[in-house]
Length: 315
Image (cartoon, rainbow, N blue to C red; front, side, top):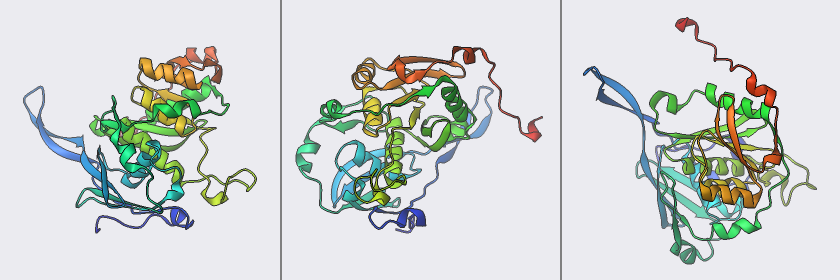
């Protein structure tokens, strides 16, 4: 396990949380190309590598991933597929890039794992070809908290992403997802598939519980999962039904996309009362569902977009 190391002390401070390695791998790869002038040059392309997940020594699935935060990806995958109900169900996740494997050790096993692995639904996701059956069955049980987002805050989110230094800007061909609290960026994740990115954020939320009093939290306050009630999920990819469901499972009632939305994604968002905002670039956007959650400020749409400051060596 030479490619792995222990997680940060802040994560290990609570003995109830799973132990995670911190495996690293290059995010881009240099290749030689021929441009439109016939000249050869080197460009960076995103890395893509398989990661096979083993749960209690049983092979579960292989994900194709950039590999930025693989332990959180695995944790979030198990969470969003509803294979584990709590972060406390996991004892440890060990990733070794030398064998492209993630070993998950649970505390009590996964109930009915044969049955839950048997039914699969083909999805439109890239980097992840199928999900376990029963995901749609849980939609009726999801109740999203009351939340609002102002148009000004929406513009702040879009601008924060625009200014973010990303792998996409240097090499393209990846999706980005982020979690915001108001206009404050909490975490930004890129991967070859948007499903991988949202799963990584779900894992991060489980590993970063919010402080709260015992009267507000169920169980040990130190292990109470981060609430999505006051959060906004952002993605560069389209809002499909699965992306909407995963956001709702994380308790996030507002999602923003640079892209559009599918018919089934729209139907599920309406059923859940989830606010789905798409085609969000610069000052433009469309709100597909739960418009009552968006506090409109139309006058802001007429304000000019301030370009990012140029570096001194570019002036």
